[in-house]
Length: 318
Image: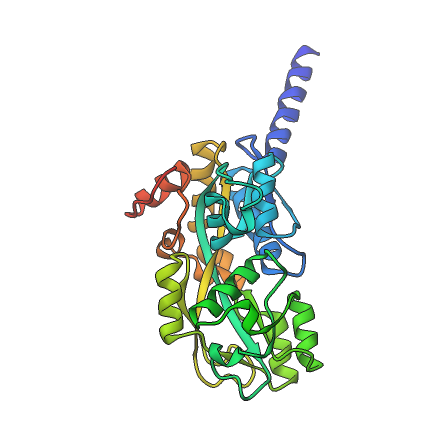
C-alpha cells in the first residue's frame, strides 16, 4: 500500500511539473489588444517558451507598452512586449513616464521586429511631412507611443503640434476618419503590413508618405532608438515602390528579478526556433541575433546576455 501511495505521489508530482513547466517557473506575459500583433505574436512566443524552456507562460491582453512596464513593476507580469522608445521613456522617467517617475524593474530580452512609423493619407497634395502644415492629422492618443513618435517626426520636419490641426485617435478611428475625409492624414505605428492601412489602401486611394532624407537624419541623430526602414513595394495595394520611413522596435522585456537560468532558457527557446516560429507568425522572419541586440537603450538581462555572448555578440548588462 505504501509503495502504491509513493508511486501515486510521484506521478502527481511529475504531472504538476509538466503543467507548470519543467523548471516549475510560471510567467505572465503582457502584450496588447486582442486584434493586435503583440497579442498574437506573444501567444506564439509563449508556446515556444513553454515547450522548449519548460516555463509556463500565460499571455494576457493589455493596453500595450506602458501598461506592460507598469505590470512588471507591480509584479503582475514577468514578461512584456513593448515599443523600444516607450521602454526608454520608462528607464529615463521622461515623456509618458514623467509623472510616474523612472521605472527600472525590467531588463531587455531581445528586439523582435520593426514597428514602422507609417504616415498614411488620401490627399494627393501631401507628399512629405512638411506638407502636413495646416492639415488635420491624427497623431494618436495624448501621451501614447504613437503621439510621441508623431511629435518627433513633426519636429524633425520643422513643425510643431500647433502647426497642424491635431486629432487624437486610435488606428481604427483614424482609418474611419480618413475614409470619411474628416482628417487629411494619420500616423500609425505598427508592424507592416498593418490591417487598418491594408484596408484603406485596398478600398480607397490611400498611400504612405515617406519619412526620409533630412527629416529621418535629424530624427535618428536626436533619438537613438529610431532606425531607418524600408517598407517593401507591394506591402500595400497600389504601392509600386519601397517607402522609406523610420522605425522603433517591438521588444521583449522581462522582470529584473527573473533568474539568469530561466531567461537564458527562454531566449534560447525563441532564437533556436526561428524557422518554426516564422511558420506560425510572419513577424518571426525578423528574428535574428543582430536585430535582437541592436538599437537597445536599456540594459539586457544577464540570462539573455549569456545566450547572445555564446553567439558572438556582447551586450550591455544591467
